[in-house]
Image (cartoon, rainbow, N blue to C red; front, side):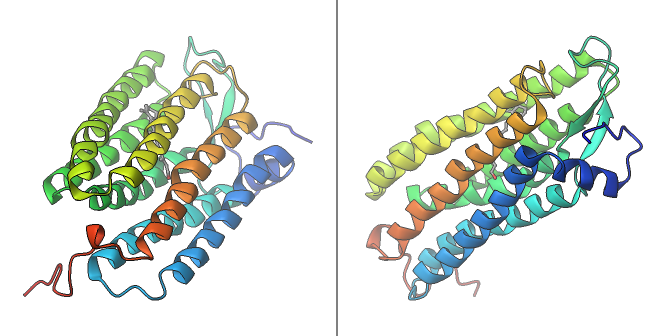
Length: 264
Ligand code: RET
């Protein structure tokens, strides 16, 4: 049943391929369910919020799951999956391998909201928050380029190196800049937990990319996909829940007052 539909596969063939592989399909569907539950939990926990800055953090974390539910729907339907031929020298050279390029594309939209929420909790400024957002977009788009480059193996790895350099900028902002700021803001305890979950979790993505079919092809597609899905559970839903439980109490450390963010 699991015959490879190849590079000219129709969307329906990809859809059927995904659903013939229980492990692969469940790695998508479970995340649709979790993203949906997380959105409902945010609505519930945030129902009494009044402070505009606390609400901004709640909206940011909600958007992570809004992007996620859409991303996994795209993968499930086969819309954002393709079979692409690997270049010469790759472990699967000449074969057409399943590439979940929708993941890399949608991280471009989800990771900025994780960083906005973290930066606001640390009490950082918009210069650093915007810098981290710009670099995560650069990291995800170059990661997408790495996955979709079929002309040369060297260029795939060059994109990977570029993306990794952008990633290190983000790691620096979180570990050095925001950690220090969070101590001063008084959110150090929560930020410390979020920082560990985020930095450790985020390092898992390039490691999986490296070990999976995109990289040295040590892990098969379904295992790689579950790897990403588990990392998503940690870096998105668990991080979101920790943030929302804290923000729901509207502690003064994260509140901005009723005129916060007014544009007049
Ligand atoms: C890639 C491959 C190229 C090198 C690097 C990567 C890093 C990806 C990361 C993704 C984080 C995603 C999250 C998604 C949540 O929605 C693109 C895998 C460095 C860090 C947190």
